[in-house]
Length: 282
Image (cartoon, one colour):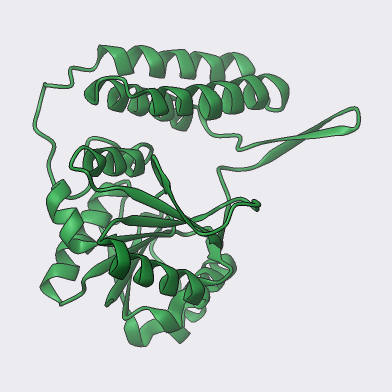
């Protein structure tokens, strides 16, 4: 397994980013850092990344282009430079045991053939490599040959839905996704907010208005495009409607009226979108 890690950064916490890279640095063959930030990396930031420069390349277009474009750039770069696997990472994720994760995935691929694989992001009693409907982008190990089959990452979306679209795209070709429940990725979602209700403390990702709109719009488009798979419908209801809206927006976050409007606008736009309007670029 020859791995190119790609990290898409947006105004990151540089110390956290350093911990992120340090957690897998010794176990990958190259690193591509794509900067979506509002400003170029300054000298003090460069010092944080300097220990990793001997296997790192840096790219930017001096604007936030989302994650599909950088991931597709990494896909083509990997093919041209002899890598066979991508490790796709957010800038605010940290592996607890990447070496173990890599070994488990390598063994799984040797025994069962290539698939999409990812770590768990929650402490759980489950163990081993288990088939799942979808994985998050951060921490996913993706064989280049499977990206070829998928036609790359869907560039219809800015951020949200790209991971689920890839998993469902390949599942339609009988290529499955697996979660390694023995490997943990610590992942931060949004700008977390908390609120106490008596003895209970509720947590919420506290996403922006635009992000809430895109989450609902994009997942409705995927739901329609793939003929309403029940597992995705349940995922939208459980995580987004109950988790993000009922618990997060209504019980934890401020600006509730504007956020509910963003959610309903996203749902409306998702159903209005013509899924046959244009061919998706790779």
